[in-house]
Length: 108
Image (cartoon, rainbow, N blue to C red):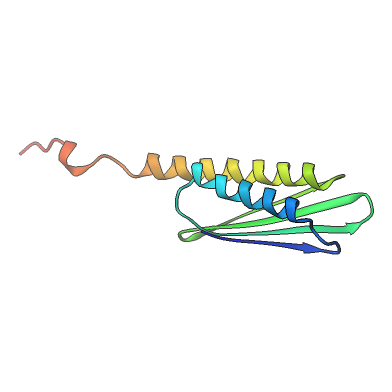
């Protein structure tokens, strides 16, 4: 899994970048086939922090955005939104996969 963290309009500390990378690695618990995670931390306005996340899985892209007063809260909200979407996609995979052919009874 490729993780890319970037910051706009401020210099993100090493500890903040490390925290975001660790959170991104934990996303594989909810959907194991994540190929890429891109996270943009933005501090454009004085009292507004924004986090944009793009998670690429197989043939799909999951996006989440969060705006909060501080960066920690925005990161938490964005990751919660992505987790919810990944759980939903994982459940779809399990639900729509269907029964294996060996367990299907055929009447001839």
